[in-house]
Image (cartoon, rainbow, N blue to C red; front, side, top):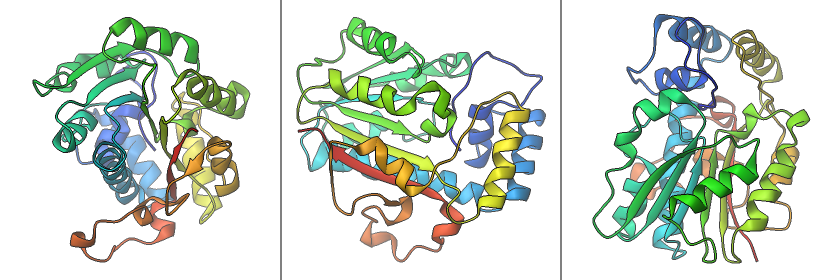
Length: 269
């Protein structure tokens, strides 16, 4: 599960730092590692799931910039920077790509300089915003001056919405964000699921709740609802390692159950 967050707290587990630990990073504390290890006891595949999610982000950014002609990206719920970041992948495919990173997490702000090393042809910006207030997010993105929202945008919501329970209206949030984006824009989304191991994921959700982080995992049908009214790119909504895998990387060594993360990319008409 990825990095949502609230206050900078060093005495309690923090979802962004736990995700950093799953990825093998060093921006975490003992309290985060203890909670992450408890998650691992429930679900030993969590590290693989985090790496698969990161790899999906790379492939989707490369697809949107290199195949679909997208030159503008909004990445909400950025989390602690982990190279390569989205702008580095997009600008490798399209050096003039522009990216606005959005997070409400003070710990991400501490490391935001790593998100601002844009290519000379492109641009990046970091703004503070909470996905549960999509109007303010869009206002902050516009105020950054980095993007032109009258042109198509790639909206990235990776490993984020499982931190937005139903009582915060996650489907309405996604609709609000997409309604403001130009026709031809894309949604790239990944989301944890209990479909393959409901008992383990109930335990994981409880670990996050105990740490003070709201969480709700969703079935494939529930994740698919986020794409209502959009046209899914092939191969549709699939377990993340099955979304346009790189042929050069050979067969995947992980199973659907180990990943337990749905992913898809879809276009707005």
